[in-house]
Image (cartoon, rainbow, N blue to C red; front, side, top):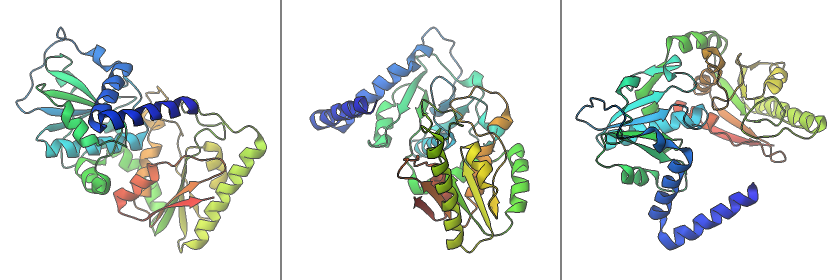
Length: 333
């Protein structure tokens, strides 16, 4: 797997040298659309839709392929919104997989909602667009995909706004009634300055289904990782003058251990990856949205990174910190 990835990246590097970035990325994007089968949903025979005069850009999370976790999706939506504003396009969000985004986030200052019947799959009217690599210029790559079509369906997980994330997020979103209600008990508990510490262990402890990630080989290694992570919480707590510590993680096993520590607050609910579950239960997916907004209100944000076990450098706490315009730090263990 790693060897194949290295070979692919070497080929891309050669292509960039010979053809330049634009042609290389355009070919990668076209190949990516082909591999993911997006075009098979578009045909001249599909029903035409009455479209407004203004062209539109629609962020798509419709289950036709993997869309990433909540952070990947949110930052892509915000970036697509920014692009649409700057290029005179109407902006909409079609987030229906595995459940509708409106269960958690609803329009704030901009109405991004769209009815499924207003989405055209007639190939004369609409086309799929794709972005997926952070090491190319995604704004110009998206510009090159625009043409005479009137509706553009964007599949993306990339960020093009960086430090403008907070402003744009707040223009787009506010918590739904369900999410606001779910936040209330935690806001009551965290009613004074607090810090947050996040752990992205993927499936290292064998309790979180995601892609093909495998657990550590034995219980001794798992215990070592858990003990290291718990020690990190204690160390961070000593370095900060706060009474409460919000701890977030994708591992139920670790969270059970963490919440036994003094002053630690955790969020109840299922720890599942939004891309690798087909449940239609809203309650199954609300936990990361609660955590994201709570992290954004903390005094400081930490992400735990274990060098020995190479825990994932998650963007989840980093973007929550950006939303709240607060300090973010990686704690190396």
